Image (cartoon, rainbow, N blue to C red; front, side, top):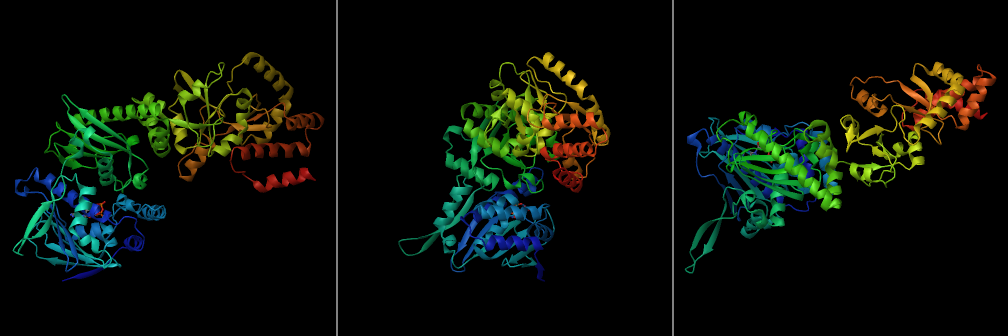
Length: 622
Ligand code: ADP
């Protein structure tokens, strides 16, 4: 008996978006349905490796019935049970749905609806061209009865048991009144050639020919060339073909760069790897993401979820790896542990990092485009891949104090621009460029003409913990630890010692007032314009990270910091005078609180008690 069911709420929302939005290219519905069919055949073929009964002619057949306005896609793949249909089609049974819907809205606003497949919901694109979609399917290797699922895409679907002998799936679309074009053989052939040419199973379509005697004959033609693009000579593959293949792998978008690997010897494999032009929307949604590289063994698809193939920090790559030496008939889990796979991973990682370096040297503009999209992810490698750390250090870029907003430089470029007496590489961690530049800690660097790298990415702080050195130079935080700035350090150090002696009473006074918040109060050469700043101990975490950890309910070591004062600043001079005249003066206490507030505000930290701060300001203004 047919059962009528409601779509889950998020599916309704999704259908609404799909159906009521203007699509720049509805053709892609067929790419998505053929991709699903090919996936299903891949799965059946994989199962057939260990089950002889399942072997047969893998294929995907299309048919058109112009009169009834039907277009159907039939595969002899794995099929689905009723439960699987409900699970896969009636729900978006993956986490991150809400985030994904929001992203989808953005994507749609950006005029890029082809990206829908990235979210693992390619099936729904059928409703762009059809007012009713019917799925008939029977699961291979199971006794479960066959099922029919149908829906007009408006919130409900029906599901019922049917009789069907063949395993596999038929998807039938009732084509909308204004979408006649998808009932034309030439149009369907064109779409298949454009988007699905390299699918390795034949995609067929019957063509009816009228003979001279007015009788008709039906000829079933194969529409795709079935050439595995990664096995072809790379010089023969055109940019259009790469684009189509990339679109198939990534469900939209274009490749920025193509990398071919042809490894010979004891571990033979071929790889075709793309660096995408843009960040796929699903990259930060682990459950929705199809893992970057597909693994084939001797042209048989094994898995698209092979973590052992590329390191995490290259997870933006898309492509295919086809091995000749991995065993075919073992489980995917065991395969993941095969040492050959680890070798393939090493070789891919080395090659990709090498290609990125070449791109940086030969086409810096292209590289910057890449880095702006994926730099955040690549940088994680410094932390995660100790073996390749040095290579990745060559590839990372940062904004700098002396550069324009958005202008990126490498560590090498930074070093090349250093004045001869500068010994270390300096950086500052802050939430934004603006806050970094406002930091009083940068004053001394400005006055000396040193540049400072601006680290405004949340991952930067983790990474810097593994970036002790580059090219034999230490990386030093501009606002942590005692200032180590060269140029006659002895003389300057002496002067500072002298000043400290003179200011000792003031320093002690301030520390006593603020000792629950500070670990010390001292004079500094760091400042030229500002009166004060807060600096961390050399091994402390930044206030940004501290806030981030707290926001994530993570334990954050409460780090007390050092208040540094500029002995030449008029405010400090006034305070020095006040303490000499009357250490109990109320004004001095107010100045002390204000000084601390100022130091917090300039680094972008919130005031613990804004009201008290304002009262102090008003009192002094009177
Ligand atoms: P995706 O393919 O990205 O997972 P879809 O919405 O296109 O998302 O498909 C949802 C799921 O439905 C698939 O993952 C698959 O499990 C199932 N499915 C779709 N089409 C078929 C088919 N022709 N044969 C078997 N299963 C299918």
